Image (spheres, rainbow, N blue to C red):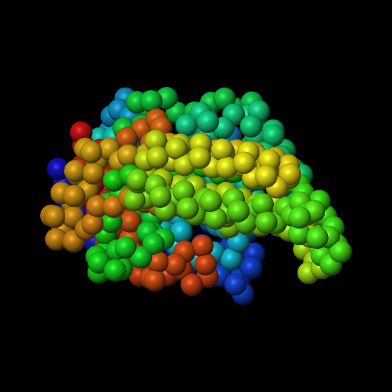
Length: 417
Ligand SMILES: [Zn+2]
């Protein structure tokens, strides 16, 4: 096997990340690049240009997942994937997702520079909308690849303007008749590695440049509406109130209690979005809408927590005489990294003398969905102060380069099997 002739270039990684960051609809406050907005489309086009400049064959499926192939010598073998996403939440940073896409491009550049033709095809993948920013559901592209987002779902999912995902795709020229061709059969991908920023402070606290993800925690999300009775804050005695906000508070505190009491160390529960109607200081709220976000590396303990919460919903409803409307958005299963790929990643770290830490990912990633049809693993690089989904998100280019060196080494091993 021919050897790589160069190490990953932090300068090249910086060049692409910084150029990609110019496609930004709110440059005064970090990075905002929401699915299929003009800046996101421009960002996609830029990445496709970089892919083409590397001599890769670029194609897109009917939900806009982008695949850039470095053809292997044996087209009968299943390809190896690497990639992540380029969409963001509002006022985010410039690394979440993008680091993994750029690492994939840099890995392919290193392979080409060394004159290596792998046996298996390598594909750099950009998954459509990992963030739920526009349509309220995460991992749209990778979910569709896993067969868990159908055309019917795309016709149902609406953005804030009431436009459905299917309408938006059709307007952009995506062929909805090809939607049924998106799912990937088990065995059709040999393995997939995603490099991502950690979005937590574990690696920084250990002073280590590389994390190897054993398990990706999976979310269960609810949207809840509480209907109480809107009334005057002065003239309504305490015992005659049906305060929607207090019902929401009780549920949020019960969620905290259940998460803290969980037997899994990775259980977390959050009420992060609350809309109080009418939101006035002298009015008892008659309507509150709020989000519930539960994550765990263990599906059983998460299901137990959800069951406990559902019992509590009924209890609060009866006791406070309010009406709860509960919509479950998703109930995803944690994904475990493939032991064989994890082993290769560890060998690459040892060979390159780069210290690493095996860990759980509390955040979800496209790999969670890809893991439903292919063996996956993830490489984490440190996030300064653990901050992400925030303009202050920061990762050293040099750490992304170290992660890329581990990535390319492992991709090559996987493509030679
Ligand atoms: Zn991400």
